[in-house]
Length: 61
Image (cartoon, rainbow, N blue to C red):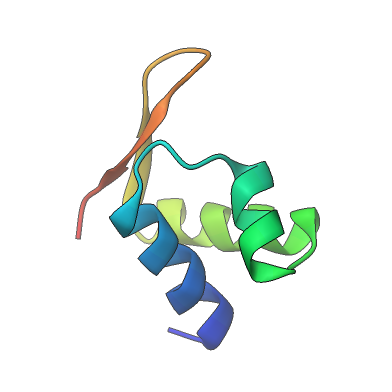
């Protein structure tokens, strides 16, 4: 995992309710970068999103 992926994964692991906006704010990454990292984590089976409008993150690995 590269450093951006590790940081985002760590934040998601510690707070399943965290929003993309909060991740952007805490990491100073661009929204686009955070979205790419999250997409990558989903595709690799590390995380999934559960629920509707106010969904939560589910850590799979």
